[in-house]
Length: 196
Ligand code: GDP
Image 1 (spheres, rainbow, N blue to C red):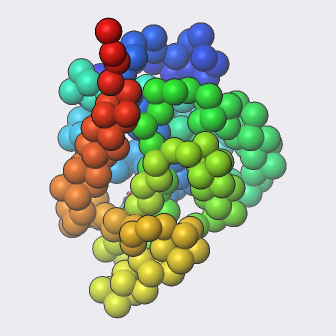
Image 2 (cartoon, rainbow, N blue to C red; image 1 turned 45 degrees about the vertical axis):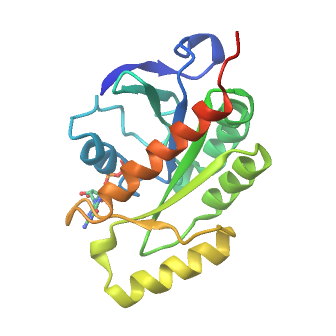
């Protein structure tokens, strides 16, 4: 996986007609850990100061699709500002970029979806994009609580299937998540076959 740059506005994004899989989640949900773990490669570390990281970060995976790290959100102090930025800039990307195959939303299994996660789900649903919800840090709770949270989050977000659960600590759920991301990419390609 190669880092291919940070951009927000359409003209600055990569130009190739590769599918994009966006990854979203509140700050501290475990997104950087998960991306490094999924692709077993250190990603370029972006600024972590709250509210600073507002660009989309593009990573080319296997020369075939872009993993798009959306800005983290959720620090209470700057939530309002971030919310506005989300609504305007990231929201525009989610609604307009036709290369988007789907949005992976990370949710901490201990806390469930935040208000911003719920907002994001609405944007994703309204755009007709595929949704993949993933509960992170599964090792932090017992089996019973895992099952309970899967049910609860499925209901809350009105998902057709229970969310995946993953743990960077135990390796749980890695294969399933990679397969689900590949399915998003394959589904997009199937829907975007170019005729001649
Ligand atoms: P980000 O802000 O979403 O990029 O979150 P980070 O990847 O920096 O992770 C936030 C904290 O959660 C760090 O202390 C990680 O070590 C921890 N963390 C991330 N994933 C897991 C996990 O699967 N299990 C446990 N126990 N801790 C995790």
